Structures are given as structure tokens and as C-alpha cells.
Length: 264
Image 1 (cartoon, rainbow, N blue to C red):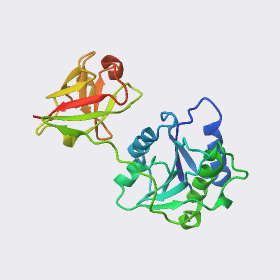
Image 2 (image 1 turned 90 degrees about the horizontal axis):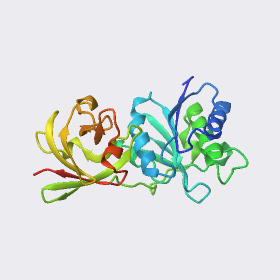
Image 3 (image 1 turned 90 degrees about the vertical axis):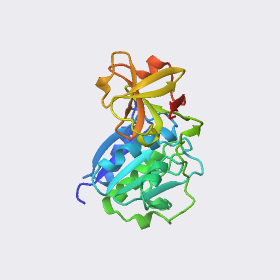
Image 4 (image 1 turned 135 degrees about the vertical axis):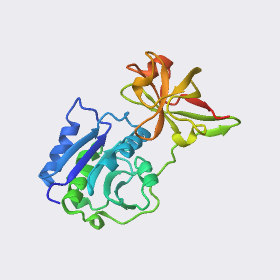
């Protein structure tokens, strides 16, 4: 592949040199690489937010894309760097669960503990493994796709299960997984959790932060000004939104808030 694609998903932010350094390291090894920024504003240290971010994006890239995912609160500790090969994608990340949704979505994955230290920069900093370990490995994978050279396969990699809504009588109890840049509340409900027959412009009974959401819409614009509505978003989760407003602010809730759905 003459022009490999490497994506970047991190919690580094964009106010200092960190992201630029990752790109410099990659381009010194794979100068023909196309580097795509998915998100550098993952909530700091938040492995779940990183997992949701990469899971929502990776399937839209060309085959053999290498996804570099760095949300690494354990940097410098004994947590392992890993290389994951899926059907048409590769992932380089710390072994802390940030790839859990990839494991859920892909039928078959191969997970390798990256131990081939001759691919690392030298010396390796205790605080910037993104530069010294993950970026060079991602670049070498994209350059040669010789995954076996990076280390042995492992089966005890870290993964977590996304919290599922719980049935309690005639209700399902879920929660807000994340708040996006528009203030939309992304819940852990999916279309399968909705009452049978619920569709566009249906009535729905949701309680969020003690406040009611009663309308299921097909588009954001169908909500009246200031009215919180529910919509199945592009990532497959039920979201609560306000047309040209911020549902998080209108409802006064944030990540982790309980969401109750009437199903009876």
C-alpha cells in the first residue's frame, strides 16, 4: 500500500505539541502516510469515551487503515501496548479496555502484546509512550503490515462490557454514556430497547434528570425550540437532543445521569 492511512484518536487536546509530535514520528518512518485526526478531545483519561469514539468511526475508513488510539492513564506502568488485527483494520493502543467495542463489533480479532522494542524510539519516556512506543509501531505496521513481528498473540487482553439497560417492571433503566459537542445526551439505549412499534414522531415516555422527554423524532429539526426530543443517532444509540440547543443544559444533566424508559 503506497499511501497507507493512519488515524489518531487521543485525549491529548490540541493546545500544545503532543499531536504534532505523533505526526512527526509517523512521517519519519512512513513519509507517504495519510494521517487523519478522528478526535483529540476524548475526555482526559476516559477509556469509555475513547472506546465509544473509535467504535463510531473506524468502519468508515479504507481497508488496512491503522488506527492509533491513545487514551492511556496508565502510561509508564506495566500495562501492555497491543496491536489488534481485525477483518480490515488494525489498532495500536494500550491494553486498558479502550478497544473493547472493537472486540464486540468484530467477529474475529488477533491481539498481540507489542514487545519488539527495536521498533520503539530510544530512549522511551515514562510519560510519552504515544511518541516513543505507539506512534512508531503504528507507522511500521502501516509501512509493512508485518504484524507477527510485533509480538506474540495474547488472549487475556483487557476488555469491558458496555453497560446495558436494566429491566425493572414496566421500565428500562439506562444512563447517559456521553455528552457530545452539541450537548446531545448519548444514552445506552438502542432502537431495540424502544417499545414495539415506536417510530418517527411517536410518543415516548422518558425520564431524564427528573424531567420528561415525550417525543421520538427522525431529525433534530423536528423538535420545537427548547423542547428535548429523543432520536436514534448515527452511532445507533438513542440520543436526547434540543433543536439548536443543548439538551445537557436544558435538562441539567451530564454523563452518568439515569435515563428511565417506559415500555409497558
